[in-house]
Amino acid sequence: MRRSHEIIPLIFEYRELQKLLGTYIDAIPPLLDKNDRLHTTFIQNGAVTGRMATKNPGLQNIPMRTELGRAIRKAFISDDGFVLAGLDYSQVELRIAAFLSGDEKLIDIFKRGEDVHRAVAAAVFKVAPDKVDHEMRRRAKVINFGILYGMGVLALKQNLCTSRDEAQRFYNDYFETFSTLAKYLDEVKAETARRGYTETFFGRRRYFDGIKSKIPFIRASAERMAINAPIQGTEADVIKLAMVRVQEYIAKEKLEKDVYPLLQVHDELLYEIKKGKEDKVIKDIEKIMRSIIDPKLTHGVVLEAKGSIGKDWGELKS
DNA sequence: TTAGATAGCGCG
DNA sequence: AAAGCGCGCTATCTAA
Image (cartoon, rainbow, N blue to C red):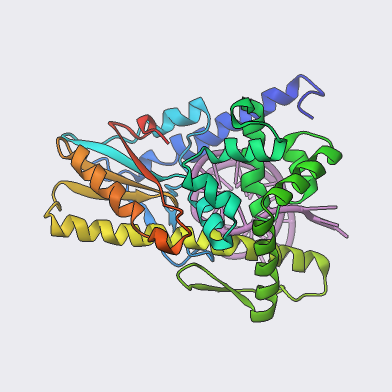
């Protein structure tokens, strides 16, 4: 309806401002302790996929996507004498999908160190990688994240603001290109129906009701959850292992007074590091994060992790 | 006044 | 009747 009346954009603008004001600017400052530090509560068994969650306040959903939102993130700063370090896994879920499925085309994209969205755009739109423009890459990104989680043609159409026919073509071309991935997703559905659960790379299970339901919507819903579970779940396992190994490293190197873990946001870790130690520590943590899964077990796909430094959270590149 | 449900939206 | 997964928080409404 955005274009149907001049008031609509204003309503969206009002909602954005009201969301930021009510949820963050008004609500968070009262939670600061006497040292102006914020203490969230980690829920370690709250999410069915194995992810953690945080509450009071939820610190895994601090704004970033809009300029005004990012301004709120800038209010999170490191202590005197310390810098903030953010370390992100790049495209973990797609890498996990690549090696869980064994799809050679997807695996090769990562083995060659290519930009996965650009490469997929090239494959789906049938052009050379250097002929991929910004819009094609954006669309490929939507397809990459959406299709993996069972997004249908109609949702794809909505997301790409295109016709049903064109969405259908993208959908077909994607699975024609990545046919082994398509086969894998079908196998996950079938195997989940047979066994009643999915497993992550590390063997953690999630059980499903509804996967054998005769009611189409119930079954389709369970199938989408089942497709997502091994991928999101493996990501959760990976970063938890990384967090443990980083703490072992901190203990071994006697860095307890120099490196403080602050936050985990599903595919990224936030630390506060004593000034002067950040370069070495970041390199070490990157190495730990990359080493969680041996590429021998992933058809050569490596886990890529990259750190960045800033005085405030908004400065960190991600 | 409180508890629960819903809409909407912030994040990965 | 619904058609991408996983969360938590605020505002709002209804029922008790």
